[in-house]
Amino acid sequence: MENFALIFVAMLIGYIINKRNIFPKNTPIILNRFVLYISLPALVLLKVPQLTFSFEIVIPIIIAWSVMGVSAVVVFLFCKSMSFSKEVTGALMLVAVLGNTSFVGIPVIQAYFGNSALPYAVIYDQLGSFIALSTYGTFISTYYSNENSVDIKAILKKIFTFPPFLFLFISMFFIGQTFNPVVISVLESLAQTIVPLALVAVGLQLRFKLPPEDIKPFLGALGVKLILSPLIAIGIASIFFWEGEVVLISIMEAGMGPMITAGALASMAGLAPRLSSAIVGYGILLSFLTTWFLHAYITS
Picture 1: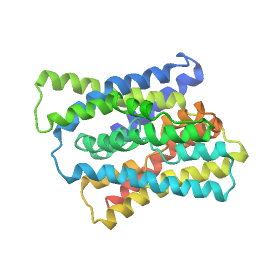
Picture 2: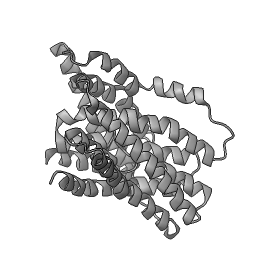
Picture 3: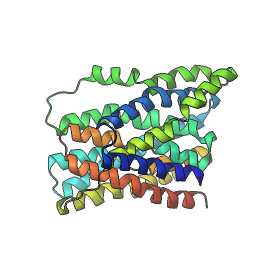
Picture 4: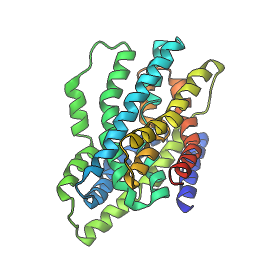
């Protein structure tokens, strides 16, 4: 209960700060960079070495990419059937496919499953969502914004120099090892900043304006992201008879709301910025309710 109270209070603080113009407009960028460059790498280095080499490590990756792949196809066909513009289609291909498996996903997973679940959440996020954002997200934003070419070298450089991913690679060499207590204490202190800072940043970026013409793509995007995506994950787990905590965590991650960075990417590419912000804002809030139902269902 305490974790959920912190989640909502942190988001509320961010939302109020934004409305009152207390902090500079670039505050969300600064907070997110702190989380991405310091907090999340500390969490990765702290938690991933606790894993043991097994097939369980692969399950979150398989589920993550399967969910995003199927979701992308469904979104594309939905947009085509509704004759949405290229800009709206591009926006939905980003925010309805890529989930907020880090800034919101990690705090929610921690609240439901405790600290022991975090290594699997990190793997789902870094080897699933982040790589998809860097590759698929870059391609979609480039293609639908009428750019001429995609720089493959730039994409690869972005992936392998991204701090959380870099530290994920480094931490693999420490699996089964125990750090010095001082090192652990420092990493724990830095990792604990993820929840308050990330969720204050989420609150700062929430947007709730929704014109009538955006209702159909809005409902379609949230239907795919909050309902269809976790159902796909459940289906994959059922097909292969996968069970255990790692599967539950992967299903929960699949059901997280839209990725804030995907919304920002859509906005920067000129892909229906107003619609993208609304989907992310409402989607994050609704995801707290839908993941509650999802958790109750998969653990019953």
